[in-house]
Each structure stands twice: as structure tokens, then as C-alpha cells.
Image (cartoon, rainbow, N blue to C red; front, side, top):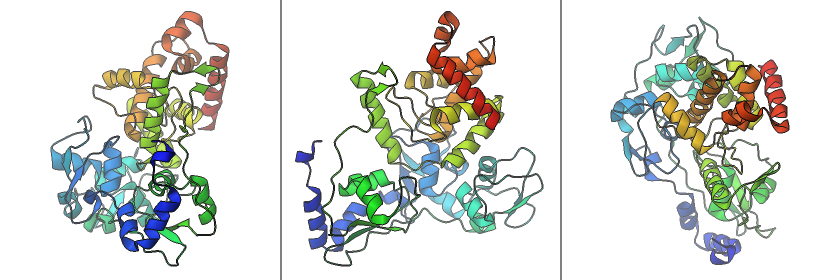
Length: 386
């Protein structure tokens, strides 16, 4: 929608000031399913199982059990999922005692989270660890606080009324992103960064209070320019491709995604599970996106593994279920399934790496192009890092 058709940012902020807390509450509102009193969740466009699990605070395995579904079940916008029973009766975890879990050989954070029904973020918090913490067999992790009384899906806290006649503040709720907040208030991301002395890499936390406007500087409106252009290197992509890329980019900005450290762990564990050298999978992911699940290219290559939709459809056939490239686990599964496929059909590791970039048919028929040779070198260098 052009800027001329929108409510000007200054007028919207003035409305918020004049109306007290009510307009800000409306602006800050999120769907009712995130409130603790609700026991269902309505699927939104772009949702995957991981996104829903993070939004509701209910593990994926519990969601599948409650709804009689599995990881292969297709999700559709408008579908209503049960979440309430999981908040009061989580799946029991294998423990060495009440509220603990003993790490087994081959365990990773994702595996332990699924076994215990406790989210990875809660496990890290309980144990003073992070996604990069190395796990060792025999290590005892605390799970009790979350296993006995799991935290319900966080209830959004409406933004308080402005504290002065010229200041507008907003309280961050679960799932918020800088991009989403900027769109909601029609204020540029650069102004949000400047007013709050944060960077684009800063992590937003529920309960954090952001200054939207301090009255001293005129609001900088968001831009109507598409965030993703139509060219990459020496290639130009047609309008329908870049339009889809921009739509996927906006969807990924509006949903929670794992951190880069978490994505690295997901890639490592998924590769091991699928019989692919984790170093190779990690090197592809690092070269493609630096483990950024929100990355989208002008070619509509999506997520951590930079998988285009047609390759995603092919990977879905390889694994026997529909994969949602916007979902972090499905995105990694698609990329690794394709790596496994092309490595089995190329005579050398190098040609298999090149096929991920140039396409299997092109590499076998014409050999690697100069830019493909450069890509192969980067991936092989990446393998040495992991």
C-alpha cells in the first residue's frame, strides 16, 4: 500500500497520545490464543510446528499428541490446534530424579527438549547454559521447574500510556521483531534503533520497553521500497519471483525464529540423523546464510539452507512429507535431503557441493561455472571450520 494511502505516522502517534492507553493497547494486541486462559491456537500464514511451539510454550511432541498429528501433518491457516492440556500436564521426561535429565550419548538440545517436553530456551535458563554449550554423556540437567509447572504461553503486556505528553513507549511481547514493530507504528527501523540505542542484531525480550517516539524528532515513516530487489550477482529475476521473495521475507520477519547458534545446532543434529556429514551440512548453511533463518534472496531462496520452492517440493518427495521452508526444522531438512541426494549422484565431493549451487544437471552436463568454483572453495573452507 502506498504511503499516501496510509495514516501518516505523525497522525497515528498523535492519536495514540490523545487516546491514552486504548489505542496503544489496540496496536499492541496479539491474537487471543497467546493468552494463558486460552487452550487453542489458530494457525497463521507461514506457521510451522516450531513457530507454534515457541509461541505457545508447548513442545512439538506434546502438540502432536494433543491433536492426533505428527511432524508430517500439513498445517493450514485457520486450523485450530489444542494447546491447553499440555500447559497443565506435560509429557513425562526420562529423568534420574525429580526434575532432572541425564544426558545420553548422541543427545543434543533439540532431542532433550523433545524427550522432556521442556523448551530449549527454558532448559538453557534453568541450567545457566546456551545453545553453544557442549553436552556430554552423564551430565545432569535441571528440568524440574519447567517439567512440574511449565510456564504458560506469555500473556502480552499492553504498552503503557505515554509517560509524558510527547513520548510513546511500547512493551515487547513474545514473537515481536523490530520489523514487525516498525510496521505496526509506521516508524522506520533506523529510528527505533537510534531512540533505543540498540542495533539490528539486538535480541528483543518480552517485557522490554521500547521508545517509539520521544517528540523531539519527527517520525521517519517506513519505506514502501521492497526490501529485496530483483538482482543478485549477475542474475536478474522476474517480478513474480521477487514478489514471492518479498512476501516470504515479510513472513519470516513476523514470526519467531531460532538464533544463529540454535540453527547451527539444528543443522548439526539433523545432518547426523539423516546420515550426512555434519561438517558438510554446516559448511553449506554457513556459506548460504551464516545460519540466518530469516534470509531470503531475490531468487526466493529461503532460510538457513537457502532452498528455493521447487527444490523444497523435490525434497518433500525425498523425505515423504510436505516441508514448509519457512519452518526452521523443515528448511534444514529440505537442504540436507538435497545435499544427500546430489552427493550420491556426483563422482566427487566437489561436484556435489557445486550441484547445490548450480544444479545437478548443470554441473554434470557443463561442469562448474567460475562462480560455482568459488562457491565450492568457500564450502570446503567452511568444512574446515566445523
